[in-house]
Length: 143
Image 1 (cartoon, one colour):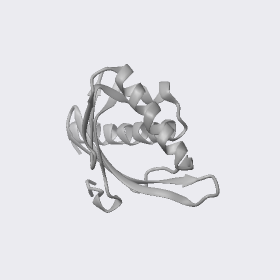
Image 2: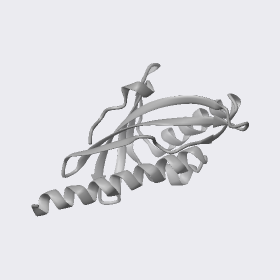
Image 3: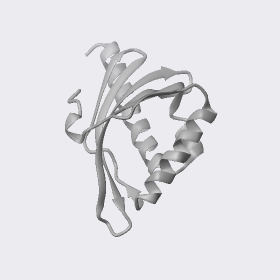
């Protein structure tokens, strides 16, 4: 096995861990921890359209608004990615795609979603640059 391949596998594990840590922070409403995982600018693409947040303050305002809407709908907790597929496409770029479930306080499923992420490797680690929200059946099989 070449050194380049081994480094890519190491990065895949680092990206996977970073995304799992990110989803844990996100579903626990931990603003400061979540912000560490986002690149500036951050782009969100979904059914409602495209949103670009140029600054940390823009991203924080979006998160607070998003979390408030989740809580209004009865959100209590989120699960982990299942499954999470990660592929490093170059030394500094990775793509990840996953499904996740959110739950109400009574344990009932609130919603099931899919998301695909584009990440960039920076001096501070892997950062999410683009989040594409989609149906859970649209998870990309990248492995």
